[in-house]
Every structure is written in C-alpha cells, then in structure tokens.
Image (tube, rainbow, N blue to C red; front, side, top):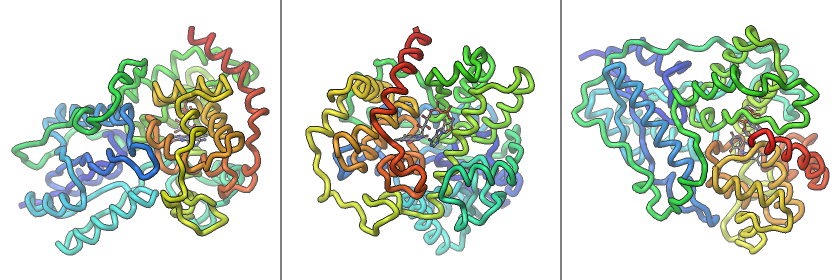
Length: 430
Ligand SMILES: Cc1cc2nc3c(=O)[nH]c(=O)nc-3n(C[C@H](O)[C@H](O)[C@H](O)COP(=O)(O)OP(=O)(O)OC[C@H]3O[C@@H](n4cnc5c(N)ncnc54)[C@H](O)[C@@H]3O)c2cc1C
C-alpha cells in the first residue's frame, strides 16, 4: 500500500493557498481530508455564554459544506465526523492505514493543547503529526525578529515588518487529488443538531453572510472591484466607517490573508491605490500582530489582569450583573451603544470602531470586568478568533502588552468621532 496522509482541517477551510494540502498531495499516494465537529465547541461556558453562537455555527456549517463541494468537484470528499479529535484521529489512522497526519498549528491555548494531545497519542502509534503555519500574512520565519523579540508595540512591529519582511506568493489551488476510498463520508450536521436550544428566529434577522471558500472569494472580488468605496478619496474615507467584512472568511480560513493581499495588489494595478485597500492591509497586520503576541505570551491574554499579573480567571470571580445584561441586550443609556449591540446580536458583526466603542463603554463606563465582554463576543461574533478577540479586549481594558494602547480608549472621544461616521454609513447603505 502507498503512502496515505490524513489532512486534518481546522480553521483552514479552503483549497487555495493551503500549504498543508499542497504538501499532503505531493508527498502521498492518497489523502484523507477530515473535519471534526467537536461537541465541546457548542457547549455552555462557565461565564453565562455559549462557546459558539447560532450565526457562527451556521457560517461554519456552510464553510464545511463548501469544502465538501470543492472536493466533490475533484471526485473526492471530506470525512465529516462528530466527536473529539483526540479520540477519533488515532482510530482513523489505524482504520485507514494512515502514514502521517497534517494540520495547521493554532496559537491559543485550547487549540494548542488539543494538538499536543493528538500528537502524543499518534506518537504512541509511531505516527507523526506535522504542523503547518497558514493563518498569517507573514510567516513567522520571515519576520525580521524571532517570536520572543517581536516588538510589543504595534507601530514598531508594523514598521519593521513592512520594511524587512516579504509576503510570500500563494500556493496554487490543487486540480487533481487522489483520495482514500471511504464507504461513508459522514453527514454534515444542521444547526439544530449542534445547538438545539438556540433562538432560531435570529436566522431570519438579516445576516446574509454565507460561509465557504467560494463565497469568500466572490465577496473579496466584488468588494475590491465593484465597491462604491472605489470613489472614496482619503479625506472622504476618514468620514465613513469603512468595512470590508472579510473577517468571517478569514477567521475560518475560507480566505487566506495572502490571497487577500495579492488580490489587493492586483486590484491596485487596475484601479490604482485606494484608501480602503490600505485599510485592509493594515487590518491584516493587526491580525498578524495579535496572533504573534499570542505565540509570544501564550495564555497571558486570558488573565483578568492581562500581562501585569499572574492570576487565572475563575468563574467564581464573575457575576452576571444587570449592567452586563443590559449591555448585551442593547438596553443601556447610550443609544449608539444600543444600536451596535442589537446589530451585533442580530447579525454577528459590527465594525471595528463599533466594537471599540461598546467595549470601552462596558469596561470604562459600566465598570464591568472586561473578560465578560470578551466571552460574550466569543459567543456572538461570526468572525470570532481567539487572538483578535482577546487581544483587542485586553488592549481596551488597559491590560494588554502594547503600553502605547493602554489608556487610549476614551468613551466620549470615540462617541464624538463615531456619531457623524455612523450617520454617514447608514445613509450610504440606504
Ligand atoms: C473588542 C474587539 C474584539 C474583536 N474581536 C475580533 C474577533 O474575534 N475576530 C476578528 O477577526 N476580529 C476581531 N476584532 C478586530 C476587528 O474589529 C475586526 O477584525 C474587523 O472589524 C472586521 O471587519 P472588516 O473585515 O471589515 O475589517 P477591515 O478593516 O476590512 O480589515 C481587514 C481584516 O483585517 C483584520 N483586522 C482588522 N482590524 C483588526 C484588529 N483590530 N485586530 C485584529 N484583526 C483585525 C480582520 O481579519 C479584517 O477582516 C475585534 C476588535 C475589537 C475592538
């Protein structure tokens, strides 16, 4: 029998620019792509929230379905299973005579703990778990500094990285794949199977974001080439809350950040440089920065005191106060905060400026413990990813690692800046 590589898909639900997949195809006779719906991702947390809310669950299901469709077009499939990877992967390896397992390395503790467990268990079967890096715009080995020396101050990280590092070209989308023969590829669950207690009326409240690689690529193309933002000058762009809404696809890896970057370069050749193109690239740098900070500091982002103190959060410290509840429901004394919070609940998405405003309000005006806001965002955001969420929350709470950001978040100032922008954006939408 030839070499068979099991390709464990996690937050990398795409065929394009996927080094793990490209290498698995090149180095094996057959591959077995696998995705696990892990029941732990759909449980309640100790912090009065669900680990994954309805809208992200829907987006995830659509993304896995889209990946299956792509493999179907290549006369193959992806094995979809419900269960814990550390239990199922060793069994699958035995059942299908797997010679190696590939996956993309994550940075947050739950995810890295899981892959360490899987690695140990596979090792007992004399199998290697090979790690790939495919979530960032810049590969860590291409940065002008080792991870331990990455500057904590974002502006320094940005300056040195842009000056000294290059964005690699994308890996090509595979056109031919030989798949392991599997009798039953498994059923993709419905949202009702994963979240039976959810409020399904949310599904009709105007979130028309659809998960999947093809949807992501189409959204990217339309945004870069046909968006009304093409008309925006730098001066006008300052007055509008410009959003690309690429983050849900980036978070699940339906889009690779390098693909977004190179498609922007292509669009610039056609339309010239545009302020909204630069904004996306700046966003991708922030995204890399928080991921690298997670790599550098590990679990520090999840501590109440952030980088300053060593304590670990426990549910005992937490109270589900009225203020917190009103904030979640969009029933505070601040109309703009309420507008954003209701939009967040109904669509799973608000702009970066909206997120900063509501987070600043919760922490600095309502004096609620910041981690409770971060847990709520983790539940409801369609684009949730640990490093971006916890990193941004820690910065706003003033416990992050970039001392220059600490103390930068003043509610009244943000409000003054946002009110005209928000009106502008709403007018532009209508
Ligand atoms: C409190 C708080 C929580 C957040 N939680 C998340 C989260 O869970 N997941 C998430 O993807 N982003 C998070 N962000 C960052 C940011 O708000 C979103 O990425 C952005 O609003 C997505 O909109 P966009 O795609 O239109 O962004 P654009 O402005 O078009 O930027 C392009 C891409 O860059 C990345 N990006 C932009 N800004 C940031 C930033 N400040 N930090 C990290 N990445 C950024 C996103 O992937 C985004 O899609 C959070 C920000 C705050 C203030």
